[in-house]
Length: 179
Image 1 (cartoon, rainbow, N blue to C red):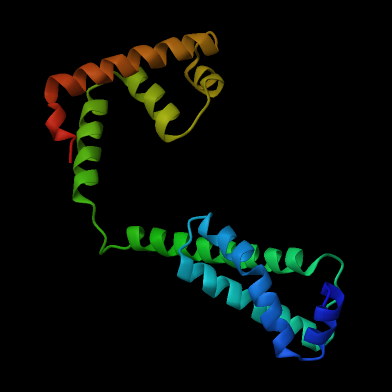
Image 2 (tube, rainbow, N blue to C red):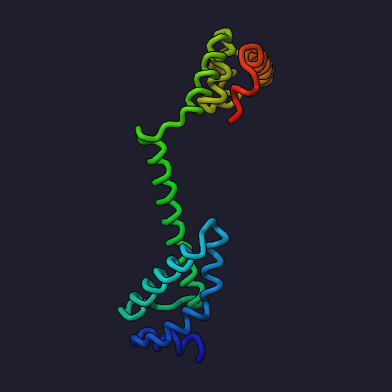
């Protein structure tokens, strides 16, 4: 049976033809999910969901194949997996953002860094804050702080970072930062 015959049989509701497709493309579809941080079970679930979508579109009569079936089903799998990864990522971020989730060690480290940054002079504090926390470029920092050019801003950032390192080393030991 060639691909056109299989597709025609699926469109007419032949579930055995769907089984042929399931077995034929199983490895390719599940490999995509597994190679993109998925488990074997997640891969099976995504592939089955993709075949349901494919089946429903095919039997509805609204599906016109303009590519190989494997390409079409692969794109469904890929889209479903991306949605699942997005959902997982969003769920993970929501958990970390919730008030119940507290990372005491990170909070303590942030306090230490803030304490040391506050001991820097005003210009150093601004340069490091603009660069590391606000994501500003050296050109933006140079303009904002009235430096002669980008190289002056880079030099200032380097000196301020060295100064911050010295403050941290003088006030804290390495064990304060290790888990």
